[in-house]
Length: 229
Image 1 (tube, rainbow, N blue to C red):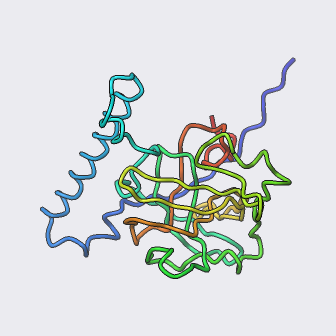
Image 2 (cartoon, one colour; image 1 turned 90 degrees about the vertical axis):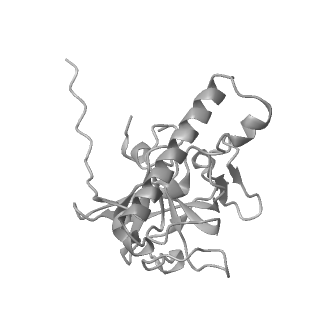
Image 3 (spheres, rainbow, N blue to C red; image 1 turned 90 degrees about the horizontal axis):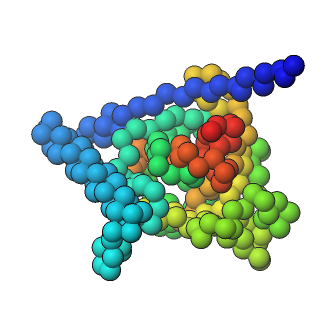
């Protein structure tokens, strides 16, 4: 008789609509509505282009419009809260069901490399539970088959360079640390992107992205690290 697999542990986090944090940026409800409609239009345009590209019906100049990654950073609608590192820094991360990378800004930052955020900056050097992923010793954790990731043979850091559809980009290296789910008060060690160089427009209300993509084989999204399928 085959025994059933033990149940996987569950984790719960709260999500908030981004407009809760950005109301002061709008003069009235009409301007808020216009912003929401613009984001909806951008998402619809991305889906249409991605579908046509997949079917091979795009060519020439139109192919240049297809996103270099799976989502537009600035068009996310929701953020989730987590406590990060041994100091349990509370940060909000943009929820992205289309991308497969969990990342947040890592201090200390060089001049003009990190964007302004409302929450305290997570400082990796101050976290006692922070660890870099050494791609020489742990090469299986550095997905070098993906063109956005590569192993730096001098520092042996697993580097990444991800560009979003709006032209924003993030660069950094793969590491791991402990995050705590606020509702459950349950800590768990996860791999994430320690982003040190951001260009473009980013939301001050969020400190990074929690990728919830379905590609669990890469191991960088949040579900893939919990045995999600």
